[in-house]
Image (cartoon, rainbow, N blue to C red):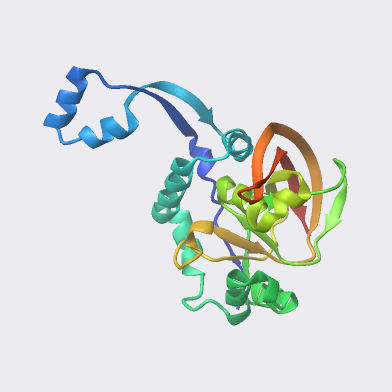
Length: 251
């Protein structure tokens, strides 16, 4: 079986716009009631301008570092993936039944055989397009310019909010005392990846798992938040910074 190059997908090529809203007037509420859109006006308000324009993956990571929660972004990204022709090509190359080790990895990472997981990524024979951008959440140590070679498959996602949540999962942010939202830029055209798709219990994670033994260079890091609250339990809190880190990925 020949390798299959996955189409480049970047939701942020289309520019994500966040609008400003105000309270509706009495006349506007009457209009909304007549047109069966009253719930929208009451819950969201009336659009009154543009609050922020996000034109890139880096801008999206910066936005999440600043606001911490944006469910609308996640919803729009899900809708985009469900309707985008490029992602349908990805879905055609996702097995109907997830391979055993990859399924184990997604459901219980700590109990996975990572060499077997990597083997199944390679066996699927799907590779990323040069220029694809993805997100990864966690602490990425090292100086700008430093190169690391991965020693295990690397979990990434199409969604910067998922990356932020992953960095805070299982007390990681509390223990690391820092969150990095990493923007990964694929700089090689032969990097194997397994996309888990939008369905199932973990479909909201929009996960793309990259093969082992990649060369990753840290291009930049910038702090955009000093006041992210993380917890071990409700009575144990830390205030930590959030950085955006840009990484280039090669083989």
